Image (cartoon, rainbow, N blue to C red; front, side, top):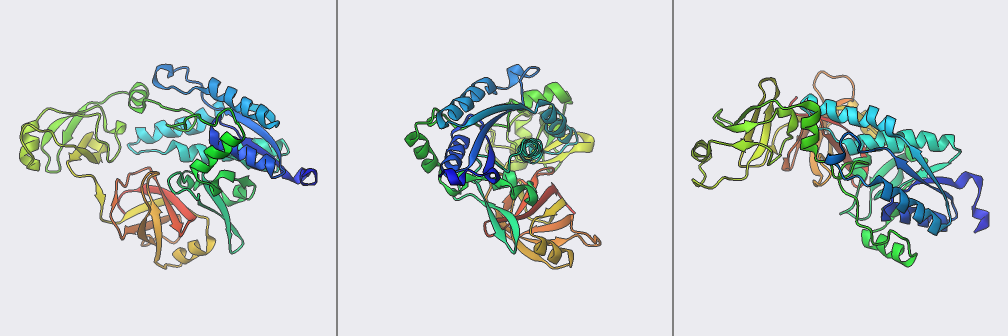
Length: 383
């Protein structure tokens, strides 16, 4: 074992205080890596203390306890400034523009595998590692991200924007396991977080009351809630506060009109979904059926990790891939082609070949070939 502890196997593991990153550190230690556990402090809920329950002090204590149990070095690093400047500003600016951001993808790209990666390499680490459920595979000498073995926990969607050159120096030990196997290893090793509940909510923020936060930061701008035929049925607090598919946060004060137009039972308010946002006139369009995309939508700022596929699209070839537009949504079969008149591959037209719901401006479309992440970009509804 000692012969394996060489200088070129020094790895900094992102210890979040949870069980997944703890087991990642355990596995790497047992495989002979020189492991340093690092807790990142990226968020202090000062201004928004009443809106979030981010227990960073407890998480840091748990991470340090894991490192002590494993007998590995423990360090803590602060990226609050970077998080505020990059992730929080992006989050607010996207909502301000009427789009729906994905802060977890931006956090992974810019903080965990951006600021933290650069810091770790500067500290003479040869690899960085985390407890994400994803894998790294090689295809035609290209390093590509792949889905984790556990389909229910797979986090490749959130990690799609991590560049291949950084993936070359990244390890995802638990990507080869199912969650119950991770728990079992933690219990066998008597790790102090073996039974700790999984964290939820936004990356590093936790359970944030997004609606209250946006209202405090962006303000309220009352407007009409309407049906597709233009009938006014209620009020909302500003289209910038809502996302496609949302089912709450607006009020209905014309139930009779709603019943007449939608042909629903009188006296019973149906489930309503946001299906469109008229940003220029601050109107929210709702319906009792979830928004289904049956037409072409555009994906911008496209990055191809599989260079051969990117070249084929650039040359005008129509490619069938699977596309995922939200974390908890299954990938669907689509056709991908360059936009007509566009001579580069950072904008593509996507035509769903299967039903896909809640295609939302500002969210990310991630393209898969089998279990490999081959590219992705930002959704713009329409062409």
